[in-house]
Structures are given as structure tokens and as C-alpha cells.
Image 1 (cartoon, rainbow, N blue to C red):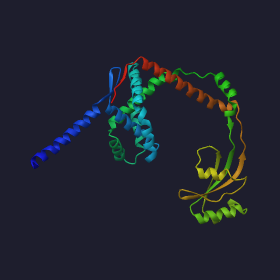
Image 2 (image 1 turned 120 degrees about the vertical axis):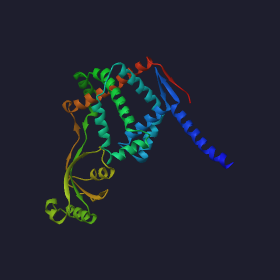
Image 3 (image 1 turned 180 degrees about the vertical axis):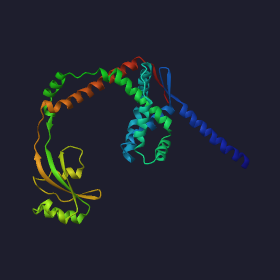
Image 4 (image 1 turned 60 degrees about the horizontal axis):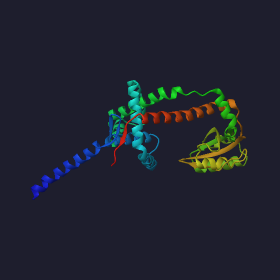
Length: 303
């Protein structure tokens, strides 16, 4: 019986490996003359995770990845269609561009081994990453050729949009501040008190160790909450209590308030042009992609 059990364990391990391999080889979709396997989908998920990981981590990263999962197969199908179109149109990518992109990604890692370890955790090797980047660049190339390069924004479109949407081009109130940074809480409290009693920063410099910089901010910018809550309660020339952010203490002095105003066309036109271009790009991209889908054979296989 013991011999039988010893023999059964490796057989079970082998069967589980075969089962896992079969699951990865399972066809989940057919796009024209190509198949998409579960492994393709898994690799695409891992590549997506790696891209997101460059901007976020932890719970935020997992939530972002999980929110992308439901539409992942559809995205992979669309990418495959565009990639097929790129190959048919003989779009090419210079190897140097792929190498440069890999080097850019590696800059986010202290050591080469950290980069390789992170790839391994995603079930990838560098060759997989290079292939994904190549495909991504081919896709961008065909979009550039068949969609982006054909978009034209006429001057009268910019003018018309501005005239019809002037209320969207209001420059918000701007606050010009002196920001004083200290390392010690007691020093920060003492300096803040001295400034609020009428002391001048330059006169107090010999008594405190601090740095001072100028900053212009508007409400609604991506300011930390504790900064926005402080500086937009200050009156002109007021000095704030010290605000602790991470391991430093900040004192804000309000030097000037620049009131909100209507921006003219010359100030607004670049933003208008960019908005109209992006809007047309999305519309034309969706239309172009819908056309490619109608010309393609797409079959999604049920689980």
C-alpha cells in the first residue's frame, strides 16, 4: 500500500500539471484566422498589471486590475484586429524603440534582478514584454496612419467652440504664497507665532533653520487636502499655523490674491484645439474599429 501511495503522488502531480497546461491552452476566442487562448488572456492581464504598477500599488493597484478584468477579452480581441490590420498594411517598429521602452521601464527598478523578479511574478520573461511592447507600438502605428493623421481641426471650429463655451474658460482665483519649510515642530510653532505678531521672515532668518519658496495655487488643482484647507482660509498677508506633511512642517504666508477672470481666445485656443482633437480622435477611432469588427470573423467561446 505504501508503495502504491508513493507512486500515486507523482501521478497526481503530473495530472494536475497536465490539467493546468490544458486550461492555459484552452481557446477562448477566434479572430479571423487566429485563436486567442486562456494563456494569451492571462499574459495580457499580467502585462496590464505591470503597466498599472508603474503608477500605483497595493489596494489601489488590485482594484484597478479587477475593474479591468470584465472587459479584458474584448480589449484583447480589438487589439488583435488592429494588430492584424497593422501587419496587413506592413507597419513596422524599429527595434531601437522597443529597447528604449524596455530601458524606460527598467529605470523604475533599483536593480536588474528586481526587474526580472517582478516579471517572473507576473509569469513573464523579458522576451514576452518585448513582444507585448512591439504589438502595442504596431497598434499605435496603424491608428496613427489610418485615424490620427486624418484628423483636421479648422481655426473656425476652435473659434466657434470658444464662443459657445466661454463659461468653461474662466481662469480661477490664484493665490501667491510664500511657503516656509522646517524640520522641527517647536521651531515651526515659534516662527509662525513670531510672523503672526508682525515679524519679517528675513529678519527672523538668523534665529531659525528653514527654507522658503514661492508657490502659486488655484482651488481645484491636485493639492493635498491639508494644504488646500489651509491656504484658502487665509486672508491677504495672513500667516498659517504650522501644517505637518510627512516629516516636515510648513508655514504658508499669503502674499497676493489674483482674482478669477475670463480667458480670451488667444489664451484658450490651445486647450480648445486639444479638446476638439481628442474628441474627434475618439469618435473616429470608435468608428474605424467598428468597421474593422464588421469585416472580421469574431467568435467568443463559452466557458
